Image 1 (cartoon, one colour):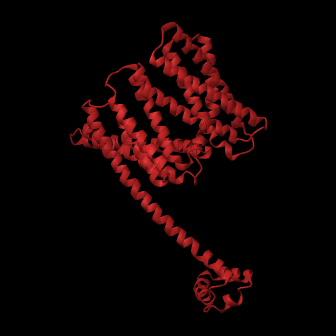
Image 2 (cartoon, helix red, strand yellow; image 1 turned 180 degrees about the horizontal axis):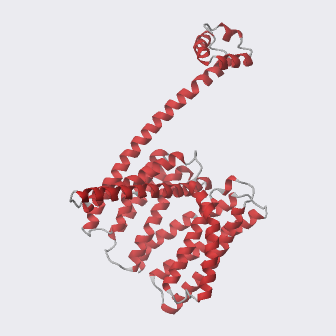
Image 3 (tube, rainbow, N blue to C red; image 1 turned 135 degrees about the vertical axis):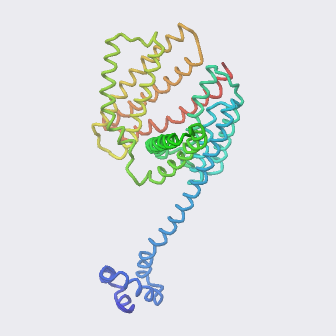
Length: 414
């Protein structure tokens, strides 16, 4: 095909144009440009023009965007590492609490999401204001090991996690699908970061050993200037990698949760039977009560990550029934834990720790009840799987509000 005449002659014959293109695509493209210049008003050629040029333009735009995105990620990863190292210096001097190290990572993750998906000014100002207030308030607290202050240290990261969720969802913070995507991101992030951290630990061990061979102990220097920096920077790198591939690849966290759900269920049943058999009593054993709550949180996490993928399938699967069984067991555990906490409050008095544990157990119990009722309606074909996911995503801000209450109000009350 050395000239454009065949294309012009067959403008009214789409099948022939397609045949010519498939037979000699490069020759067709060369001839097409001349035909397009001679017939700029042709709707048929206009469609072919977009078909032949759209991919190239789209690819260039995406490449440019990813280059800028990668560059920004690199900058804030370096800033996060430097900031974490500076904060650690003041922690070493005992000038500030160690929990301040979260401000070397979490605000930078939020900044990446804001750059990646710029929200409205109101959302942006809200994020900035709450991060500033949190940092200021945290460092106004006395450096004492009081229960209320320790609780504030433990709950503040949960509140900041909710703020990162606001940055992630942006203008769509009210949509259940956006909140669900944030939960998926967290699962993938934890898996990827753990994998990179293990690789980093192996590299650290190798480096220590190599320098030991030449009679040098660089462990303190290496930890302060390499490990700390790398731990913070890797969090940003993991955020970049997960957010880029979250929609395009099959999520690993829900898959792992589905695999482990039956194992967790079996283990939990055996454990509870053993507890009853040996006569363990969470009403009087504080450590056992804490372990009960740890089990409860683990079951909730496994169930939530398993639920995040259920919306893709309208049909009920064995995983749904396993999830229901897990939720029922979790409700039993939580009910026993609540009874034990109320007993300890009435018997030994009110303390910040008991009130905090009581509050979180009430919240989890209510959340589990909502999820179980939604699951029942789903299994009875009264609703779709989205109602189960709503029971998870719509409840997330309540955990954030409770974490903020404990972090900001408990130190004032107690």
